[in-house]
Amino acid sequence: MTFSQKETTLLEDLKSHEELCIDKYAKYSAEACDPQLKDLFTQLGQKEQQHLDTVNQIMSGNVPQMSGGNQQESQQKPTYQYQGTNEDKPKDKFLCSDLLSTEKHVSSVYDTCIFEFKDTNVRNVLNHIQKEEQEHGEKIYDYMSQNGMYS
Image (tube, rainbow, N blue to C red; front, side, top):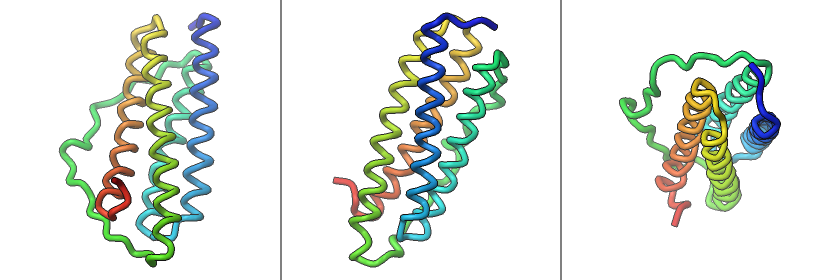
């Protein structure tokens, strides 16, 4: 598969964004005070690694097939009750706010890319990843909302 210069540049951008997400989730998982938040960040970081792997596959000319749909709608949302101290809560709120902003940005980059790629299969894969990025944002929002961190 041959990509246009613009498509190649967009893939390089996606790769760099996914690498940043992986780094942030790993760093913030180590810094988070609430054990539930550490776990959430670890899980989302693993998904970001899968996204990076997929982008790398596309860059090498191999467009993976996305299996099934996302099961999130049928899953019950987790309940989070803050397990850190009141002094730690602002720090965890900052970490969540930063990652939520990052997810919003990355989702918008995927949106742009979806419109720019001519290959339907690539567009479908990028659309699948974008939906997962939106789900990451929803999980962070749910955590924040349930713990009085989102106004």
